[in-house]
Length: 339
Image (cartoon, rainbow, N blue to C red; front, top):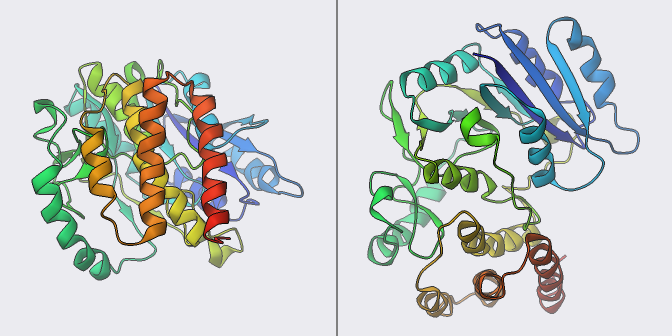
C-alpha cells in the first residue's frame, strides 16, 4: 500500500514545519512520501527549511499560486495518488507510530473511509469549555435530532438542519478502538483513495471551517464510515512561540475571526446540500437563532443559515456563495465596528 503525507503550508517561514518534518523522519513506518503544498509569501524561508529534509524523506513540493486553504486541499487531492493519504498541518508534530497507527486501523476496518487521529493540544485546560457546554448539550438532545438513522451511532453527526454536531463534547474513542464521527480534521486525518480522489472541497467558505466534515459526508454517501481512532497521536505547537502568526483559521482568537466562524458554521447546511444531504426545517432553526440575546452572534448566525437557504433555493455556485459571504460579513463587521 502506497502511503503519502500531505502538508499545506503558508506564512510559516519554515519555523514550525521543520518540527513536523522531523517527526516524519522518526516514523516507525518508513515507506511513504511527503507532499507539501506551499503558498509563497514575500521573504518566506519555508523552502530553505524544507530542502535539507529531501535527503531523509521522499519530498515533493507543489506551489499554490492563489486561493485559500480549500484550494490548497484540492491541490493535495488532485496531485496525490496514494492508496492511503494522511494530512497534517505545518504546526503539528506526529509521534513515531503516527503513520503505522492510521495504516493499522484502515487495514483492520476496510469500510473506514476516513479516520481522525488524536492531538495533544497546546492548551489542555478544558474546564471552561465543559461548563459552558452543559446547557448546549441539553438543547441539542431536544432539537438536534439526526439527519437520518445512519448517523445514530455517530458521536459527531449530521443534524436535520444539515449542521454537524457532537452528542458529547470532548468524547474520546474507547481504548484501542474507534468512535464514529463526521467531525474530522486535516491536521491529523487519513483517507482511502476511493474517498479522496473524486472529492473536491467546494470552496464556498473563507476559513475552510467544517470542510473536513464534507469529505466525511462524501465517504458516507459512498458506503464508508468515518471515525476517530485511539492512536495516531500528534502534538500541536504554539505558533506564537516560534514567531509565526498565532491566529488559526479554525480556532481564531480575534473577535472578527470568531464572528466569521459562527457564520460559516451555519452556512454548512449549503455544503451538506452539495454532498447530497438537503437540510430540513431551516425555518425552525432560524426561529431558534432569533432568540440569541447577543445581537452580533444572533446576526452572524442568521446570516449563515439565511445565506445557506438562499444559496440552495437559488442554486448558487460555491464561488458566488463565497463572494456573498465575504461582502455580507464585511457589512456586519462595519455595523458593529468589529476590527
